[in-house]
Every structure is written in C-alpha cells, then in structure tokens.
Image (cartoon, rainbow, N blue to C red; front, side, top):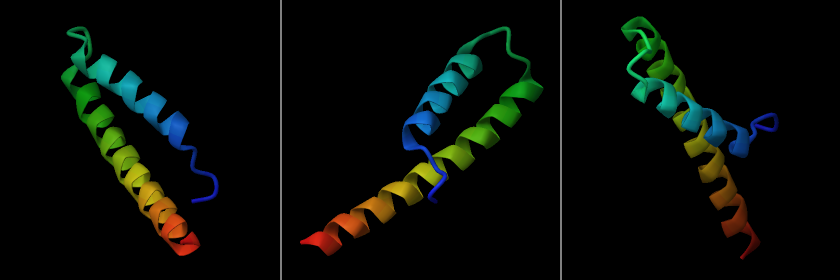
Amino acid sequence: MEDFNYKEALEELEKIAQKVEDPATALEDIDKLIARADALIAACREYLRTARSAAEGLK
C-alpha cells in the first residue's frame, strides 16, 4: 500500500465519473471504467482502514 496515492485515486475516480456520464462513451468502455472504479474504491477503503488503524494505535 506504500505506492498507493489516495489523492490520485480520487482524481481518477472523478475522471471516470465524467466519462461514464458522457453520452459519447461507448457501453463497452463504461464496463471497463466501472471495473476500474470498483478497484480504486476498494483500494481507497483499504487505505482508509489502514490509516484509521494507525491513528487509533497512536492514542
């Protein structure tokens, strides 16, 4: 998880959302974009869980 960049992941998710909402985006591409978004969301959740655990360990 050291190479994971939360901010970049959020930026990519925003771009994916824009592409999915664009009527010009092909259905085949939307399927791939949604799969990528799912992976990014899972990585963000894991990152946040790890950060929360680390913060709780400091208490």
